Image (cartoon, rainbow, N blue to C red; front, top):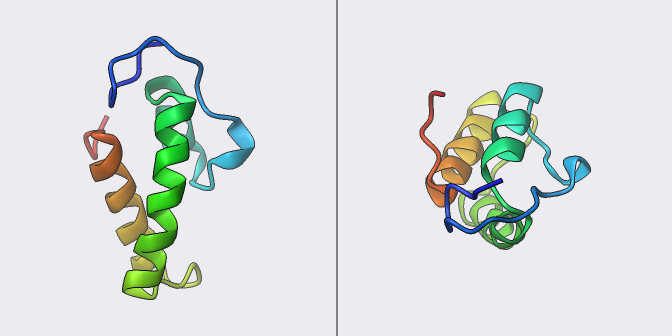
Length: 78
């Protein structure tokens, strides 16, 4: 698989590490390498803390998903 973010041939991240709904998870697994996903996991913590996001709030989950797509250079719609 060629990573859309870094352009390298690499394996996808472990499925269990992606905490998004199934359609989003599948897009990530098909498009992003494990190394770029690991970088996102570090940024994800900063985004959650910076904006004080709550996983119980649907708008906060949407904000986190948008930040993820922006960081990984994925278009919002497939």
